[in-house]
Image 1 (cartoon, rainbow over the protein chains, first blue to last red):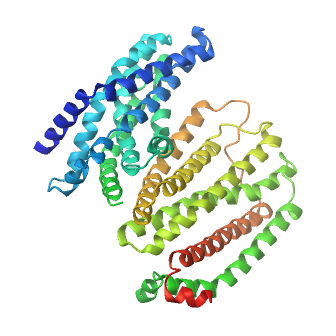
Image 2 (cartoon, one colour):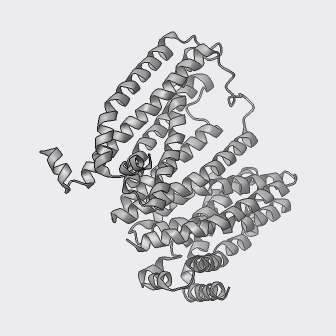
Image 3 (spheres, rainbow over the protein chains, first blue to last red):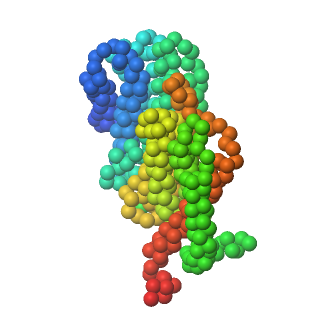
Length: 222
Length: 243
C-alpha cells in the first residue's frame, strides 16, 4: 500500500511540475469540441443530437494524447528500468501511475464535461448523465490506453501507433457511454448503462495492469 | 506422443514434416474450393428474395468466419509464444497477421458488394459489418506494431501481447456493437437473421467454409516455411537446402 501511495504522490508531483502535460490535452479537448459546431452548424437541434458522440470522441482523442507521456519520461531517463529492477511489485507501481494519470487527465475532463454539454444544448438530465458516464468511462480509457503506451515505449512515432492499437479497444466504452447519455436526454432510466460501464471498469481494472506491466517488461528488454 | 509435439517446435523438423504434408493439404483445399465455387455459382437455386446475388454469400460468409477464426488462431499462437517461448509460435503469429488482414478485407468488400443489390447501398452500419471493420483494425494494429519495433524478440512478444489483449476484447466489442446496432437499427429493413437454409443451400456453404479453412492453413504453412528459411538462413540445414 505504501508503494502505491508513494507512486501516486511522486507522479502527481511530476505532473504538477510540468503543467503542460496536464493542460495541453485539456486545451486540445476544448478545441476539438469547439470545432464541431463550426463544421456542422450552430443549430441547437443538430448539436443536441450529436452532443454525446462528439464529447465522447473528443475525450477519447484527448486521453490518447495524455497517455502518450505516461511512461515516456521515466523510460527516457532510465528511471523505469530502475523501477523494474527494484524489489517492488511492478503492478502496484503501474497502478499508482494509472491513478495519478487519471487524476490529472480523466477526472479533469469529467469535471469540464458539463460545460461542454451546455455548449451543445443538452438538458440537465443529459449533463448529469454525461458526467457520470465519463466518471466511469475515463478510468477505463486510461487503463486501456496504458497498455498501448507500454507496448509502444521507445518507438519513434509511438503516438499515432498508440491510437491505432487502442482505439478499437475503446469502442465498447464509447457505445455504452453515448447510449447512456442519449437515454438520459430522452428522459429514460440509464442505470443499466451505468452498471455495464461499471462492469467494464472492473474487468479492465483487473486485467489491464497485468498486461501493462508485462508490456513494460517487453518494451524494456528491447 | 508429446515427444512428437515437442519435435514439431524445432524449425528443421517442422519444415520437413510440413513439406511432406503440404502437397496433400493444398490439393484437398483446391478440390474443395473449386467444387464449392462451381456448385455455388452454378447449381444452387436462387434465393426467393435476393435472386442470384445470394451467391456472393458463398465467398462472404467463409471469409468472415475465417477472419474471426484466424484472429483466434493468431492469438492462440501468441499465447503459446508468451508462455512457452517456442519461437515457431512467434513465426506463426507473424505469418498469420497478413493473411487474416486480407481475409477480413475480403469479407468487408464482398459484404459491401452483396449489400448493393440487396440493401441498395454499398455500406451500412450493420452490427456484423461494423465488428468486421473493428477486427480489420485489430489486425492492422498487430501488423503496425510488429513493423514499428526493430528488436526481433521483443517485437514478437509485444505483438503476441497485443493479439491476446485483442482477443480478450473481441467478445466485448462484438457484444457492444451488436447491442449498438439493435439500439439504432433502421426500421426500413431487417437483415440480421438468415432464415434456416435448405440443404441444397448450406451444403455448398459447408464445402466453401472447409475449403477456406484448408486454404488458410496452406497459405499459413507456406508463409511459415518461408519465414523459417528467412530466420534460419545461417544454419547448416538451410545452407544445404539452398545449394
